[in-house]
Image (tube, rainbow, N blue to C red; front, side, top):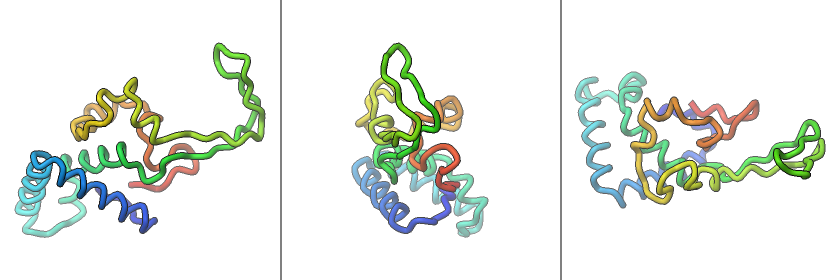
Length: 149
């Protein structure tokens, strides 16, 4: 949840999609609300950095929101050297602009079971550490990755 709001539009859109998904899933909304109230009560009603870090389920909700509705739907990268696709005669030549479809990757049923279903449990801390970094990349990947957190 501790995203550095460098881009107003992407942050606002993510917030809107999170509100939309929570409205569609009252059970998830109730669990997120309960967590927020519990954590805020523990911290004297203050929404501190520490309090936000304790909102694990809310972070899972935001991560799942960005899987289905990524702030960036695609990346572009320039090939730095000739690359032959495995088991193919296709060669991507140095200098070629390559399109990486983030949204398509994050909605691939071979990567995420039932990808249309909104399921924050995909992003439990235990599951997230096992996830391949290129299967969930709403902020991009590599040296030009958005600062994110």
